[in-house]
Amino acid sequence: MDSLTALNVFVSVAETRSFVASGRLLGVSASAIGKSIARLEERFGVRLFNRSTRSVTLTEDGTRFLQRSLRILAEIEAAEVEFSQTNATPRGRLKISLPLVGEPFLPVLARFKKTYPAVDLDLTFDDRRVDVIEEGYDAVLRAGDVPDSSLTSRLIGSYRMILVGAPEYFQAHGIPQQATDLLSHACIQFRFPNTGKLQVWPLREAGQEVDLQVPTSMVCNNLEARICFALQGLGIAYLPDFCVGEALADGRLQRILPDCAETGVYRIMWPSGKHPQLKLRVFIDFLKEHLFPEQRLV
Image (cartoon, rainbow, N blue to C red; front, side):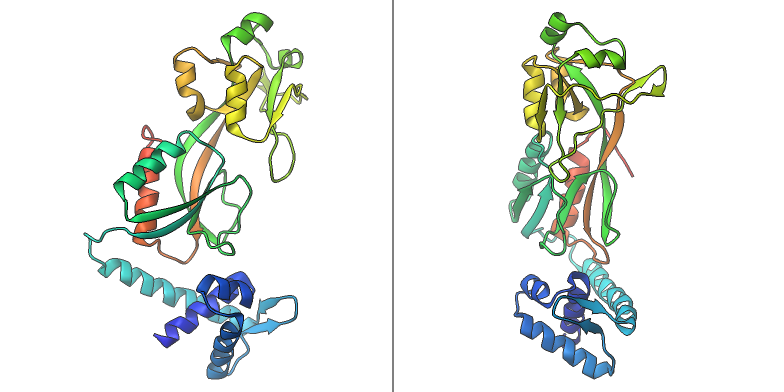
């Protein structure tokens, strides 16, 4: 067990590049982390890390040892999963980062908690790109591709981004028949919190992409505000279909310019090389089943 603890310490330092961060994640002091690494280096007779006042980096021997350590720990984790009782009750704390989106996430999260009351949910709603390992998250749910090769991901579902507006707005200002018509309309736009840039609308005419700077009647940095303003007839918004399906069905919103749309995906991601614990496995399965029930994505 001491050897396994030492391997876990080594992998943590290799992933975080910091004795302090590893100590914080593992609940021990940075000094204890340093002593554990020193004992490993003495045992194998090699230097595993290059240390400086500003950084901790793997040596060539350390890189080779990391590959072996990850395989060993993955096999042990797989054995624990394999031999765990099938009727075990998921329990414990799950720290999850989610986007700043209410629907359809909040109702599904509430249903998960009712289904698995022994799982304590620690949820952070934030559109910024979090460091899953450094900040101690069990998993992160985000739209788009996987930007970090150190994370394993699973596809949860897909959606369409569409242009919509309220009937009262179109009665007052007319319905755009082509993308260039948007130049004379009020547009409710989204500003990315990470970059400060405006979201680009995929505008097309006659099957060809067109580059237009649509008006910025209103700019928001969250989804709920854009939905509210669109419903109030303040302009046209570019929104995910799963958030406005009910409003489209009952006529409170109307879709326009169907060629100006694109598909997106949601993925849940967790640190690579680790088999998800039971509490995380049931969480992933629950999201996949209930977030987009009409979809059965592999």
